[in-house]
Image (cartoon, rainbow, N blue to C red):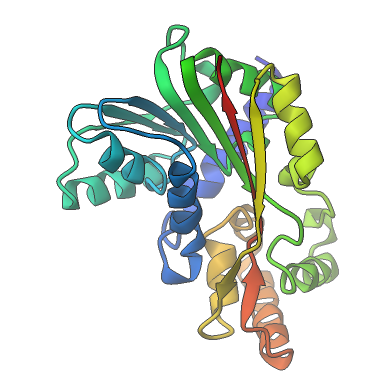
Length: 273
């Protein structure tokens, strides 16, 4: 296993273990919204077996479990034990007993070929450096007639607030600033389709969806940062830096009357012959 992959997994686990404290805040309602929307795009029926990788707090696993009913089964996998604890509580609160929550690595699941009727990966594929290889691995586990669904961020991620976030961060901690995000590699329909083709999938459908997250107050933007992939950067700051960056971000949102941030997404669904 490459050092780059190991570093990527370590960073993702640390980020979302930490972000779990805000992950299900109402200001981050987009997690649940797009997880459910991904499942709605699939023909999930009672009795099916579903694998959800990068499952977080169950945004797609729980809707899938409802659709497969007691006759089916959902396997929900995530690196973050903290997120899975929240997911398990949600499932228990809804009396769902047909989900297996597994803290694990989607690059090394080792299920047999053609094990699942549907494999779902929402906002996680881009954490793997060799995305094509990972798509191929997920596709391997799809039964004939089954589907693989990949959901990722579209263009203008968290704008108009994200651009100023990066500028403020660059002024305070230039060593943490980057103009590139891992999801940028597949943030256009063409690049996402190319990934699916290179991963060996077939019968590919690509759809985009314009979306946004309402900010009930300016401070919600900082809450989004704390409950998303931006959390890793925040955790690298000392207390003084964190307070300064938070205040400058919140003040920018307030002064510019920002009432929502963009959450545009892309969906790819491939059906195996």
